[in-house]
Length: 524
Ligand SMILES: Nc1ncnc2c1ncn2[C@@H]1O[C@H](COP(=O)(O)OP(=O)(O)O)[C@@H](O)[C@H]1O
Ligand SMILES: [Mg+2]
Image 1 (cartoon, rainbow, N blue to C red):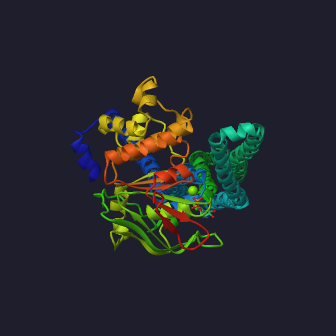
Image 2 (image 1 turned 180 degrees about the horizontal axis):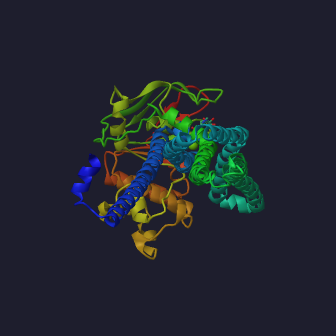
Image 3 (image 1 turned 30 degrees about the horizontal axis):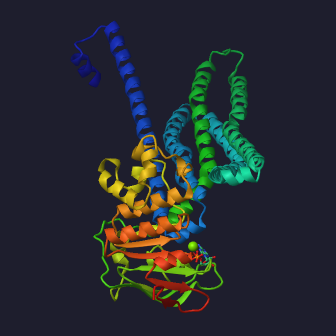
């Protein structure tokens, strides 16, 4: 009935016309099928890499959200490796093969179904044998592949660290003549990693050779089995053709599935490393995103009953420690090295959360939600100023988009920090490239840029951690005096060792072995 209808629909075609229709139908089917395949490949590839990218971003967001204590004890090279490499390895060697595996398994099932339908007994034995070969080989190989994968990941991490260390500390490397040592270590690790990578590559191709032997032997045996003297090879030919076709289509697909599985196995080590990070990241994030209006103190900034111990330290740095800083004054904090000066400033800025006690502003304890406002109030200058590989202008207006930099304010800040004249001598002035970590700047110049960075923000509380240690007394005094004139209500809390700096200060806080700080008037 359908054929008759189709016949009518097509206008009663001749035999030749019918052939053309069939051919056209066949061709469009093939085109459609391949278009679908191509499309699904695009989708899968995009999906798997997007997933990898999302994992990488998620890890980055987790790590950058961790507090400074975490970053103090964690090697940054390790974090970079996890965020950049392990996450991408994950998408290219685990998710993509898994998706491809899905598609392959589908066509394997279809093809095998077709063969089993035509010749059940022979087909089933063949499929079982083929499956068995792959299974046995996989069982033997998978341990090796996993170990290699782990090795690749660990060695990659090591190489990353070596590179970071040697480039970061290039002066020490050269002064101690360690170039050869670093190179040798790197070479050893690289060789091992290359070998593991190559081995895993071949182990993925490995069974193909056995299977080829198996398939051809099978064909030969099958020919012998089906051959009868009366009919000659003629009767065996259709079955053999079917097998040859199935073999040509099926074996590569099985092989590709196997390859995908070994890849996944090899990437499992990287996956485990990333997984640790992801598992920790659940709910562990805390970064202050909101911009907040500054919380300007009116009378006093205090630390009240603060206790704090580093995780691995034998003794606490502070126990029940209290101190008060007068608003609008300069307070110097001194004490021997290791007395806890930097830790005090970390607690004061909220970078470290104390085990007990509070930051108290104008008599009101600061809550966690107040931290963005408190951070917007303070400018912090460390002893080692971190310069970004941009320009003096962008370094002074730190974190401000280049188009939004207020150049007049940058210049004013630079003048206050006594670095304006130096910047003017650079080839492009405020827009000269600085180079990585500002290596061509002297210690004093870097400190002045750091001060200018804090001045640009026009904060009301300025915290300096040995931030003027590389400046001479006269410059230091000039900077502080002009700052006081510029901003009358400015509060300065500065850690220093120098007697001369203490003389500029209105108050001195002495951190020492004794439990309570001594507070005295230096100018009294
Ligand atoms: N991240 C840390 N982990 C463990 N101990 C630390 C850490 N940072 C500092 N310490 C220890 O805490 C004490 C105070 O250090 P710090 O505040 O840097 O002293 P200061 O700045 O006065 O020289 C020192 O004994 C130091 O070894
Ligand atoms: Mg210190």
